[in-house]
Image (tube, rainbow, N blue to C red; front, side):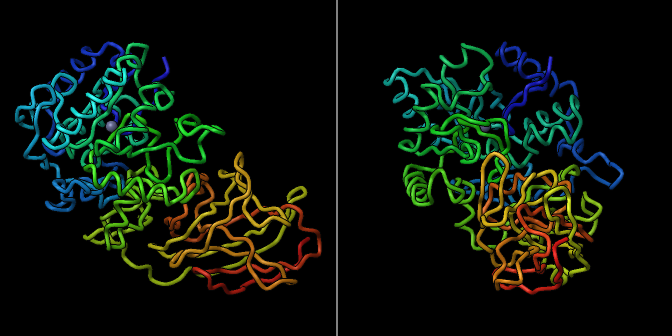
Length: 483
Ligand SMILES: [Zn+2]
């Protein structure tokens, strides 16, 4: 049986489809796994050496004490290296959701003993009451999970499908919002009684819709909404649910609720409403929390280096990171270390491939350089068409990207006009187009790159300019005539 992909933060052992359908049996499997393996206190299975040294840099997972203040209801915990909680962090005011009695972190073993921080637990009980009054019986999938439980979950996935595969299915320990004690995976019995609860469609089920509509009234917010690009036309709750959202690094999780307080939830909802829901500018909770931070880390959209996606990740380990050349090295405060200088233009040429004109440029990119979408690679399938301003995204259509300060990109123009209508990110040819769902800076690939941009509808003999730009400042570095 093919293994189901479930949410990054989902608390489930490998082959979850079977285990979780059996409820209590799922708990038993994880319980046994945890005790039989006698887990190392710091989850050292995460850094088994590979050819490059480590799978992940230790400092990306084991953050120094105080890196993220977990007690802050608005703490930002995510996949970025700076978004990690210390391994020994657990809230001091956890209570058992059933009894509301104080609970020690290690006694919180989902699903038998679900815990939240006291204030979040009170809010959850009010939310649950309101749900029941409207005819939905709440079912808690998972609430607080400590570092060890997350470690066990991650290693379980890794044992099943390998380390790299596990990074696409589970949060690295320290990087899960569930460790905050304010996060809950909330379903309804009507949904869970009907099959595997992680299956697609919950967001559009009556319970899922109720949550989307009413959770904020009780101080809860969905951390991982459905990306506007993935929505089925005319729907806010159904579409390509299994795709990872570039804004959050997670799939759509209509059950994953984070308590931020009623007042903050209202402020977030107002900000989200103002940001243009359904557009690329639509604000996520993580982005909103990042805006509160004055440090540059808020602008880093690269995830933790996991040893598998080193073209587009960031690491706190400057010297010997998990990648042979870390794509983005961060300082201790999580802010990017500066690049040595701007990218250097090496060469360019124009060629024909079928009807299309191809601009092929070589650029030397120093480590720690930012670039921005559109990502135009064979893997992304994006191209330009003369007469249209935006990049043609497969399945989506034309999209324009506003130049961002501090982001370097390849630019293309025509000699009969003085602007640069087209541009491309400085990324490796293997990079997919997932970042084209972002209006933010992304990490450029370090080293000498070949960027190939297909242009449709450009007649032979057309004079083409190629250059490099940062923000709105561009320099022409090559001129040629289309073959
Ligand atoms: Zn969750």
